[in-house]
Structure formats: C-alpha cells, structure tokens
Length: 205
Image (cartoon, rainbow, N blue to C red; front, side):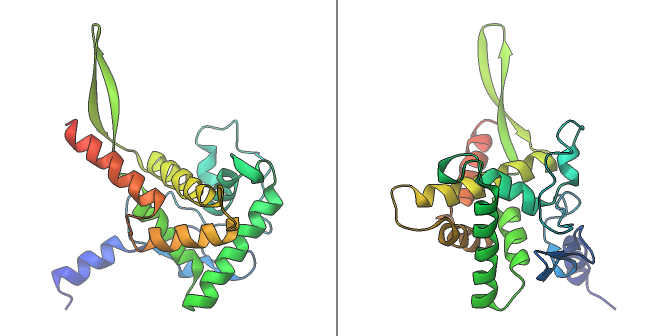
C-alpha cells in the first residue's frame, strides 16, 4: 500500500517524449524524467541522427513542438556572438558540454539539461493592459510552450554572456550554466531571470 506522499511523487515525475532514441548516439532519452508535470508533454528529446531539421516546421502552427529541445537550444546559442550562424560549432560545444557533465557526474547529462529547463521556466509573467490612456501591468500565467521558450532562451543567453570579454569557451560556459540551473542556484542567469520575472508578477497582481 503506497502512502499519499509516494503517490504524489509518482504523479509529478513523468517520462518525457523521446523513448527509444539516443541523443548524439550516446545518451538514452528514455531514462530522463521531468519533475514538472506542466512541461513534461512539451519537452521532446526525440532525435534522429544529427539534430538539424533545416526549419521544416517553421511555417506550421506550433511546429516547434515537434522539434527536439536539443536542437532548439543549439539554435538559440546561434542568436548572437561568435557562434551566429555557426550551427556545427554550437552543436559541438553543446555535445562536448554534455560529455564533460557525464564524465564528472557519471549520470545521464540529459537529465541535468531537463532539470535546468524545469528550474528556469517561469510560472508567471506580466502583460500591460490599457484603460484609456493609462497602461497598467497585470500578472498572467505563462503557458507551458511559452515557459519552455523562455527557459531555453535564458539558458542559452546565460552561456553566451559568460564568454563575453572572457577567455572561457562556450563549452565551459554551457557546463557552468546548466549545472547551476539544474541545482536551482540563483547565481545562474536563467534561474535569476525566472526569480525576477515571478517577483515582478507577484507585485503586479
């Protein structure tokens, strides 16, 4: 007979999409679980070969939901900086970062990546509502798709900013950002941004 606490834990921890696939041909996605039940259906780790689809889902509504979060993160690493448009460079940096995390921790690095996404996804944001000429901020709940977008963008931006005016490589900055975010450390750029957004939203309720 399971206690209420054990049943609650089983409800929260859910396997995510990507069963039977190996990311970069090394790590099994079926071992990864998501502790956030809202994000679990949206985190897709299904990867066939190289994570490069060439934007085939770009013109479809919610087409990005079919993309692997690995590819989406790599795409966001290319937004600014020295890796603009250099997908192979960004891909190798991310793969090398996962290799290093696996060597140091001995665990599946995809689990660290998914935990980082869960800890960096904001629950609330603010929007502005106009009453005549007066604009007033109001707190709104973020949809799961929006939460995933913001988390991936902030994780990538945090890794990029670590390389600015520094001798550190993108690979080492990705490792640093993912490790901090997966542990829920507020010194992580993504977790800090999440806390800031939720604090502003709480004051705008």
